[in-house]
Image 1 (cartoon, rainbow, N blue to C red):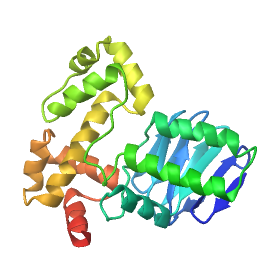
Image 2: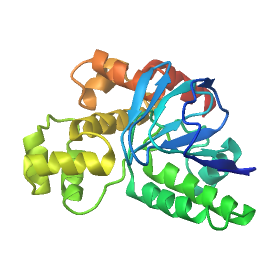
Image 3: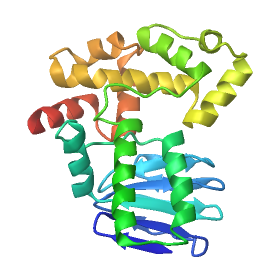
Image 4: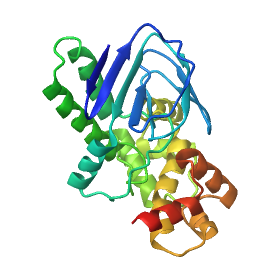
Length: 262
């Protein structure tokens, strides 16, 4: 099933899952893994999407599907729609670059669950238009990327941990310390965190440090080394590697691009 609209499209398919061709689309593409693993190849390496997670491909990102289990479900959001929502929300006018990593967010997954059920009953243009706008808002408010300076919290026990880590994200944090802040055992915490966010607590911390570093890159003349150390990375090499993996740009390239286009 493909439901097309000027603002994007929704595709849900249980057959023809063997696609092996490289794709390069001018839209934002969010790919979900509903039932099991999905694997995609990119120029930055393979990305595996566990059940219940999703990944966002930015415009013109080369990718090739290697595996889709049981169902292929994706949504494309055209750039003009996302730009319109960016303007309405008062975010940076620069085209957003979403972090390239598997992720999970309960608001987007709830939206997906509703859409998957509804489009089989009564798809229509007005429904599509508003649904894609809703998704664009959720993406911009909840998904890590160049447009954010913060990462949204979850709820319950995890909120206490996230608030504590955000207050001293540049400091060393062990899994035991994070679990203690949540009030859960180490196993309960690590398992629950991965289920809710799609990533490990340490990966979330490193991503948060990277997100916070973006403002230093754009708004100061501090060296990349000093920024990396200031936000908590142990060395510039690990910072550069993660930055390149997430955005496809080095920190220096990110700085130049955003300054030229701001």
